Length: 143
Figure (spheres, rainbow, N blue to C red):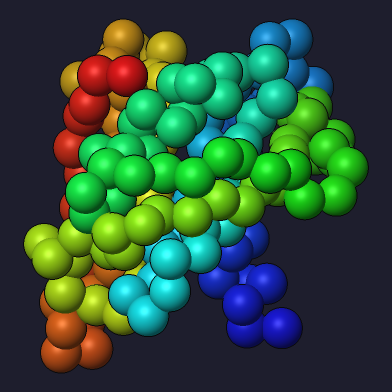
């Protein structure tokens, strides 16, 4: 139950800015890394980023940059006007050393709203500082 909640919370953040009926898919996805495992679980908006773009951006958050092939998990589901697909893959090098916690949730979204991040790919990383304190990092990347 807790793992379902941890996985769903970042998804809520992605969909929080999405109207109940969206005309266009958002360009956004979420994935989770664990220090003790190479397994990566994630979720993306179908019709947003391509799988090639997703893999390319994930490489920047995988130590060594080696991402396995993305495998869909279950059927895509419609939520709040968006079609969402769960996926699994691997990160051969594991979690980067700059993240001190046992795990990291990474959400990447292309921002279209008028704010300081408009036209950029915003990355929000939720992890811990290694001492039990939750840390949220925000940065931008290029796909």
